[in-house]
Amino acid sequence: MHDLAIIAGSGHERLAADVSRIVGVPCVPVEHERFPDGELGVRLLEPVLGRCAVIIQPTGPPVDEHLVELLALADACRRAAAGRVVAVVPYFGYARGDRRAGSGGPIMASLVAGLLQAAGVDQLVTVDLHAPQIEGFFEIPVDDLAAIPLVLPEIRESLPADVVVVSPDLGRLELATAVADQLGGTTAVVHKRRISGRQSRTLQVVGEVAGRACLIVDDMISTGGTIAGAVAALLKAGAQPGITVVATHGLFLPGAAELLATPAIKRIWVTDTLPQQMGEAPRRSVVTIAPLLARALERLRTAG
Image (tube, rainbow, N blue to C red; front, side, top):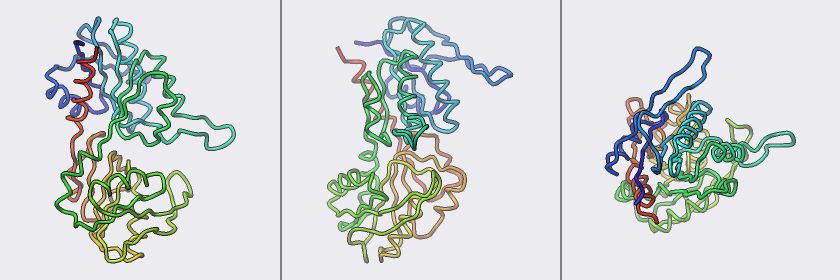
């Protein structure tokens, strides 16, 4: 049996507290200090000697600050002689940097993988990686958990039997197909061409959506442009208004809420891999991943 030490990063303290409560292991108190020049200092206030130190820290916005904090906590655990350091990163920042954008550019996801390993991380637990091939950048075990199955029971009763599960681009077609299999529906995909990191131009819908209810599934909502484009394309193809959207990671960057505030979208479902501000989103629902992470930690606890 491994003695767990759960450490909450500042990226999502509420989620860490929920996981801690389910597992029955209190969080190790951490002292944070921000120096006048912006440098970060952290200090563990309880010993982690020989324990399995589990750091829960999504690297969402501000990505660089949360990433550096994760590295600092991992290094602190290593230097405090933790038996093992596990980084639980529900949202993995820089996941879209899984390849070079062109000559002279970096592969940011590979760089982050190297930094985490250099800091002393022995195992990574993440949720619905944007690019599954990122696992290949690591030389340590990577456990990529699936969150969408947590959401499906919440929405199943509100969907008709002939719902069309829509992938907003080719990259999520496998996910859409898996969800359609579980719901007993069919699949469609929206072809698009990306203009820039913030803009994409929708081309066409492939699949029968005319007169049908649609469920869009994606791994993340950032600016909202991809989802808004998919909704417009579906309506143009004759789909019923009142489209449901499901995504794992809800970044909702500035402007996204306004872009998605259309009556054509009935409800948006996301998980709490990132903190969610619900007061300004009356048609947004959140499903917690705390039980999913707790089960992963229990497996660590009982591993030989």
